[in-house]
Image (cartoon, rainbow, N blue to C red):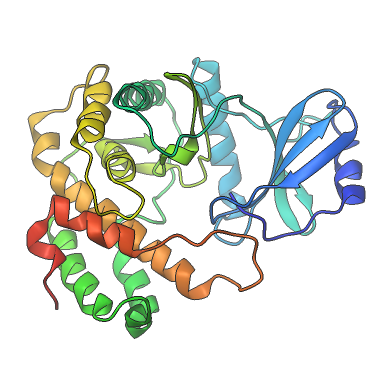
Length: 319
């Protein structure tokens, strides 16, 4: 989450006039994350999230995201569907951006989850995948394996401004992982593709919300688990691996959705791909985020360091 687009109180009040959600009491921009503009909105009837979709989210993809959330919510998954206005419309335009009013879910995102919480979230991901088994729509993964080499090329030698030698280090690892990628051999489904701890809401040891589905797509199902494993199992610098958390993530998932031998075999490659995906997207954001944006940039090197856990033979090599 982030704030790129300013919404005045007057404009937000007029926007809310179309909903049966009360009148505006307060609104506060949410600075965490890097993708969209988000406000925490309080009205006379409750609390909501207002999301304005910025350039990385294609407005044409919004029906897929919202239908997926409705599908999961109908099957008892703790996800926040968009709220429709009095005319039954969920997708609007506000300040020149596609915008939705989203149901607020209680709970907190944890910076340091426990193994019990990690296992609960792994199980929640498995339940989500089971709920999506009959979801009929598909969407290509715009941040999937086919996008990484073009994104690397766009970053180019500017990567060395982040860290000396980063261009060569990522280039070598990228060539190897793309060559090893398990195309057409593992089960695919709709996946979240971004289930970091800050995209999970907890109440104690229970998962109360899975949020921010705006990278959701169709891809290798267990790639979703690999992404979660890379996001949850390390400290914020990517230096320290917490085996108890990593094992709990996989055990929680496997308690509802056991991994096949083939999925276990390819898991290190999938996790290495997740490291490269986030190292590259973070590097692009690091190099291109506007100086005046109310947004917290995320360190791409934290994901370069994670790579050494899954593929130590790649982390120190160069092209």
